[in-house]
Image 1: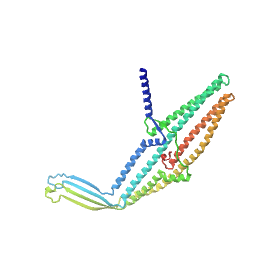
Image 2: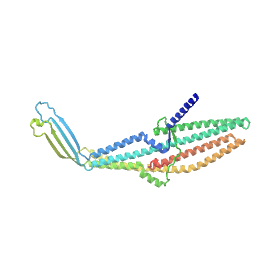
Image 3: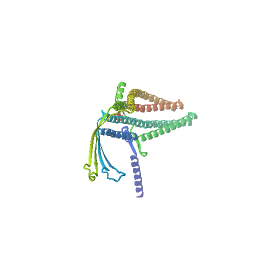
Length: 426
């Protein structure tokens, strides 16, 4: 009975440990990682608050089309003790701009345009965050593959060491062969440690980008495929120049500069307002006055006459801002053209390189097989085997690096076109 209870206790502990580990293990594909990263990004959260503020700016400028009403109360105390019938007073005032040559409309358009620019900035930050997460995700997968390669190298190195040790015992090789194979084992162990550390750092970087808790560990889905048709360079450039957030933001800033210029010109023009007051005197009925209230309604025209050149300077500033944006847009178009061209040709180069490296790995594998066979038969040297192994490790490493550079190049091209990464994930 005691043994049975002990068995149940051990089973319970094992089951609980398994549940705990499952709860802290997060299975992620790239699309899910992007969702989590976007949700936990402080940068995107701050920009969302800025967008909310922009909505209030629009509301403030829209309110300028309506009258403003104010209530004012007063109590007047005089040094003289004689009666003053007006010492209690309440006033309701109204102020309504009837015509201002379109100033309010331009201010409203500017506020809407500023919000649109913020939306494009948010979209750009969203895309940059997607590239950061994708790069970190691919880095983890790449370093995991490199760890596997390092483990394979170490396993083969140990096999060759054991073979050299056996050959030394029967006098088939010299002690130098054993030393060389031992050095290869140490080198492989060092390589594995370095690869493992790189993997740990890549995991930390990804977890930080996703905003995950320290106790949560990620298990990544290595299946990544972008459904990106490789269009011509001209089509890619045309798409980028029509969709990039920077281009759309620049166009809106040009409109804002035009609005500012028009506003500066309208500073020379008058404005017409309707104003009114309704006054109520609380104590006139006690003093014999017949009227306890009065009201006033009038039209007010504000005409700018002299401001020591302030309006002229503002107009010149607004004109210079317009001209400056023309140069800014030209530079932006050149930058985008360069980015798209680089991403386009880099993707093509890597696509060709992947096929060539497949053949290199096949050739290196065959060379190692032949060198190992000759060494086992006693007609080859351990140096030949070690050199063949290093060639294989180098070819496999380059193949892994190129494959993940190719995936990242696809992501870079998607970003350079102004597209959202998650829309192209299968």
